[in-house]
Length: 391
Image (cartoon, rainbow, N blue to C red; front, top):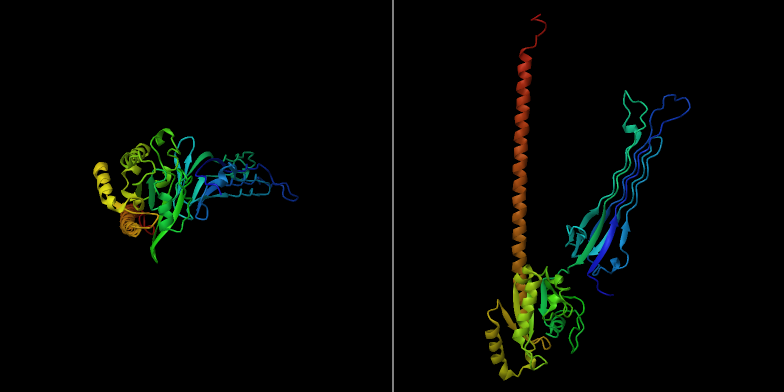
């Protein structure tokens, strides 16, 4: 199956049915009166995140989705049937925006999350709602409202904890094959990875994290060179980036330091938030460097490259140094998840406190209003005669 992470669709919620203006005309009922029912509600369009999907290919060719229109009202107080809703299923991580205004409509970041994206129109009112003592035969009715209609831009951002970054042939696919059960394509030519790959890394029975491997970047990606920036969106939800560098490039004139700095510059051009994420340097393919030259080459690279947050030295092909790296990642991610959970709990506690204070204010206001009403009643009671004694 091909991987599609972007699509454009149109959704049309159902229009509401029209109200009816009819009258009862039955034998032995000379004054039947109005009997027009309301129109039915139009169907709505919902979006649901489904973890069983991993691509937007279902929306690549089918681009128009319409919910059912509500039925018109009928005679004898019959209301029209409401239109059926439709539910569109998307991969977890799909971002839905209004194509015209670029307004965010939904971020389906959890499995099973359901969001209303187009509301059906309300049904019109029949003439039974307009009868009164002075208008016993109303002929007024209202038409159903139109359902909402939107042109939507769908963008899939895969959910991963760790993102791999680097030049083509830096060893990213080999690394993800080494530490997980994922089997991306590996070959001795550039751009063997043409779509994002996900791999689950298990460090214990109940401890794991997800790594995302994307096609390699090259200098000039911001101007469209190579595959450009089109896959960098899949790194925006990650907690940490691994920047893999080939210390033994096939081209003897290649400069690993210059290539690494070019990747960082492309990251900065794409998104400031992505550029600011924690980024660890991973020096790869040490098995291709003579053992007596490794320490000197690593020291020379780090001195020229400049300060880094953390760095690791590995050989993805032979799995040398990968265990230390994945355990360090697991510890970092555990701490990050604990921090996020603590912040969420703090926000929930603050919101609960705010709602409790609001309820207390409402209760105080209701009590004050009741007390004022009771005082007014007592004042009125003093002026009323009792048992006719004041007559």
